[in-house]
Image 1: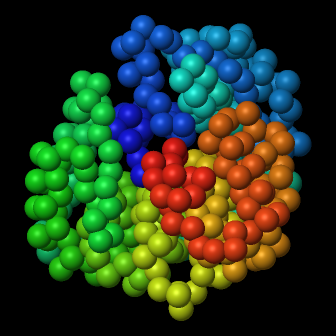
Image 2 (image 1 turned 90 degrees about the vertical axis):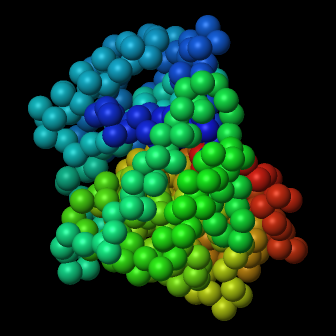
Length: 347
């Protein structure tokens, strides 16, 4: 589940050219309002032979403790340098703790063909909906949650029979309006996630599916979005799934789901890695019989992340997953009973 503070940065994505991901559940704005300013804590590089860590550090030219404004300018400078060298890269600004800001750089190696492929949209077309009202209500809901965050009023998400609700009553009133429309439009919204060329529209349709019901079928139809070319669409699909894993029936094709999350773990962004780790960990806790497959597909990658990352949402989740793979639980664990807890960071 995502907190109100995490939501502040999610909304920021549409306004700026670089990504701030609050993996640890902290708000830059909220911290600044308390007079405490987070600072630069380091560079994390997932790289290729085409550029070295020392080159990236030279381009950034950041000292430990540099403020967010300096980090932003440095990231803009780095993006420009990478573009000049025609490197296929992803640069993210990630808050790892209340006072820690990391720059995370992923560079795909064009000399190899090892990049995880993305899906092709099904019969790509602009998908017309019977009404655009759900999108309007979603904007109203997000504006309300953003307002709460800006005012320093904490909020949280609540799951009610697989539907997304909140600790704020006014937000729930809007959610109730969405519920009046979305279940009957579920097939239309799924078509948007599968076929519409606009990634923002695919992402928002995926978010609306949180009120669609019919969870096993929605889960299956949304699973290909974990391989979408857009990281925001992938993140939306992962959030939907993480909160509803416990609601899947015993005969669900979990092996296919493990493979999808394993591919997500290899993708180039911090957001992909974080969400894949938490989803794989949740699956292993809830379905201990899956640990063998997860171990085969992911153990080496998870070990690497636990050893190299200093970001809590990556390192902590990787270490927990390794522990579960080494000693699987004897019984299924609900999220409220697991090391993840009911308010897991990163979601």
